[in-house]
Image 1 (cartoon, rainbow, N blue to C red):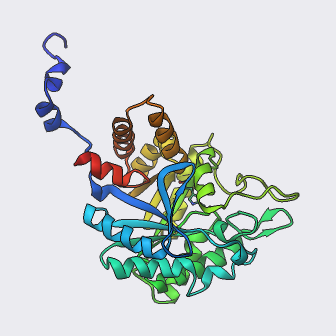
Image 2: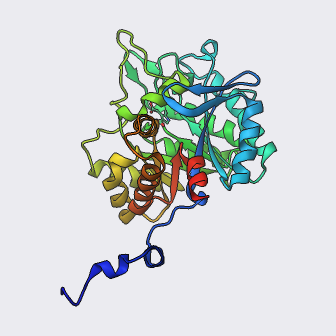
Length: 329
Ligand code: PBG
């Protein structure tokens, strides 16, 4: 009791504070999302994501080497699929010479030790911008999980260490796990986007990949029939437990900052590593406010990422990963 107990004794100076600090961020915590495009010599800044780029394979190779040198050793690949290769079936998804398959090989050739994770979802390949095959205004579940399993095998064949299904179809982890086992990819991991909410924070990402749901009659303009309602908590636990039962090695909560209650709850509930995705809209908001001089960019970045780790994240997917290495010096 006060005055015998004075909490400020432990805050007296930075040495004491750092001695008792509970949460420390390091480059090892990060998974770096990368956007890949066709072409040569391309490094296009994404308008709604300042200082973040779409890279052609030659620049992807350079970026991978730079990340490796900085101590950032896990990447999460996304591809921007040319319009003429989009359909509603997934023909391009399993093309062994597709952009994703070449991107995996490019990173693995440049940095064999780099952990390569791949986005497994149909939206960048879909003429409708949905994560599944669309029929009569519905996003089909079981047909889509079959496609995602083929996609996962194709990524594993190209050399992916982990596939990361971000689609939120029911039962896809089991379908993917079984397909990987059948094809002998027993060591290819699955990082499941288990509790992925239908969020307005994905806007800049959909700009980056030109993958927003189309505005067309009879096509849902949002992803609320498969991504979770942000009002819900118990559902996140159910989704996550199901994915673990089906074979997920790592589970994810997404987005980050608005969902740290969910992260903590899941962390307390499960015994597999929990990942958090600090998404594009979160990145864009910090960049915009910092550009205006309204917040201190580096301080806000570190505070948010430390909060994500404190909430229970073992893996953090973040567009700020390189900033963090710079800030940590
Ligand atoms: C699509 C996918 C999305 C993100 C990752 N995978 C967008 C969506 O679900 O529409 C969002 C990532 C971000 O906003 O940074 N399967």
